[in-house]
Image (cartoon, rainbow, N blue to C red; front, side):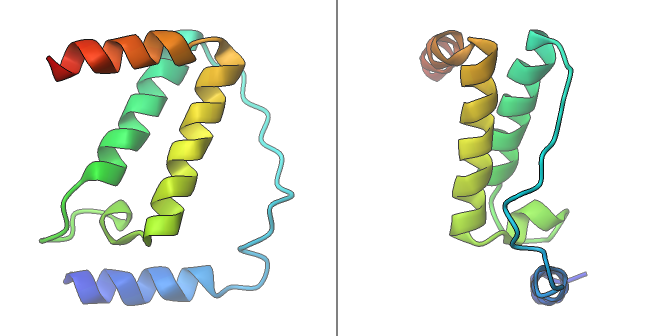
Length: 94
């Protein structure tokens, strides 16, 4: 599947009525370790370079990528892991 094919499919999925509703409540009961890993997975997926399409995340519009990162930040805040995550990011960057 080419990048264009995936982008067209993604655009079609997003045009389904109700897809932009923000009143969806998700009640997750997962460990702090899983939240930390999920946040990192989201960020790595969003940073993925476009080229050969391996998944839907690679054709996300910038706004969707930012929204996913905001969700990851919210998870970290609610779990009390935001500061730890920032320190791990700083450590990994060295």
